[in-house]
Structure formats: structure tokens, C-alpha cells
Length: 282
Image (cartoon, rainbow, N blue to C red; front, side):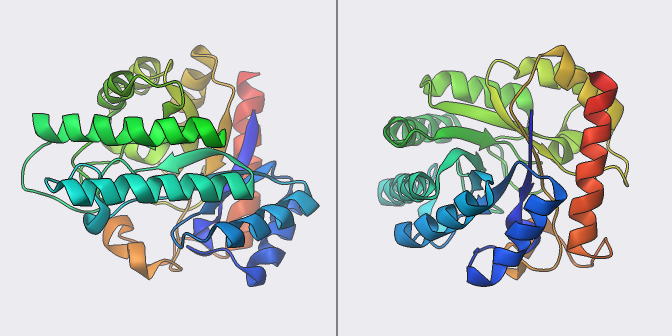
């Protein structure tokens, strides 16, 4: 099991000024980091990957799509743009040495139509994601499609439905991820949810109910880690927490106030908590 830290706690775009953050996370004992990829510059992410290599940090990545490049939008040109941008993210992943691409890049983040997903949207989503998966195979990156709670998207909201979507895409490079925050809102039974998507799951986000320090909120952590052991999961456990550094994503994340003392303390306490939980199920 590898433990990572999502850099969205600090920024949506990692630059030279964030190298001390990488150094701090390595010193704390993290195996790797999750790199936000929104400004799609392949050469830039090659530099970020080099910084991580120098520190011995492995990498995953996270991204999302919006209304202008919605892979399930009714306009074919918009869907094509979503596919193209997801492919460009994968090129950035390859340059940075990221092995997994997590996130809700299946549809537009924070966009709603007033109803649930239609048959056409599901068909469009499958077609779009299959094209992205074919490119993922060329870049040696595994897609980890993320479902979100009903307040952030309407297309994929639970583990079982996301597993069905992955099966419909039907490509070995297209898998899914599980996020404790979203599951806390949407799932009736943690063990059954984890079991429902265990064959498709390649990535986990460890995220507290208030999006701050894991272990200091109300997530059913004992049940979550027990379920993880039950299905034999052995991939990344990446802490995802949010502060006030992401005004562009505030409409979706709904983070209006700081829920922790410092980012460094959150990372340290979160890592300690995850290791303690893993020791209990060893």
C-alpha cells in the first residue's frame, strides 16, 4: 500500500514555489503526491516530475472537465474538446511520470441539467471515455474515474453505477476510484459499496467529512479500512483535503472557511492516522 498527498491542499498549479512543499511531504514520510493538472503544459509537468524524481516521490494526477469541454454534453464539438483535453492531460501525466489519473473528468464539474443522466448522456460518456482510455494505454497511465456526490455532479454518484460505467467502457486502462467523502454522502453501506466496485477500483481518496484532517471528523473509518482489507485492495491511499487555496473550485468544493491549523499539520496528522488504521487491519 502506498500513501500519497493531494497537492490541491496548496494549489491547483504546482510551480517552483511549491518545491518546499514536496520536500516537506517527503520528509514526513509520504510515498508520493497527487499533482493537479488544469493548466495543460506538457513541458511544465516534465519539470514537476523531475523535481519529484530528485526527492524520490512517486506521482499520480488529478483533473476535471467543465461545461466548455463536457464529455457528455449534447454538442459533439464540446464532447470532442473534452476528449482532446483529457488526452492532453494524459500527455502531461506521461511527462510527469504519473501512473494514475484520478478525478471526475467524465462530465462537467458543478454543472446540472435539473434531472439525472439520460441514456444519450451515458452513451456519449462511454464513447468519450473509451477514446480517452485508448490514449491512456499509449501513455502507460491508468484512468481512475471518480464518482462525486449529488451536490457536485449528476452523472456518476455512487460506486455501483460507476462500476457499471467502467464495464460499459470496457477498456483495461479505464478503471475507477473510491472516495470516502463522496461515499459518506451517497452510500447506504460502506462494505457493500466497496465490494460493488472492488474489481474496477485502482485508487482511493482518503477524505474527511469536512474535507480537512482525516481522523478528526465523522467518516466511518473503521468500516472503510475494514472494507479495504476485505476486498484485498493494495493500491494508492491518497489524502485529499481542501483549504482556501482554490477559489476557482469553490463553487464545487464549497470550502468557505479553514478547517485546520496549518497545511503541514494536516499532512502530518493525516499520514499518522492512515498508518494507524493500516496497522489495525494488518
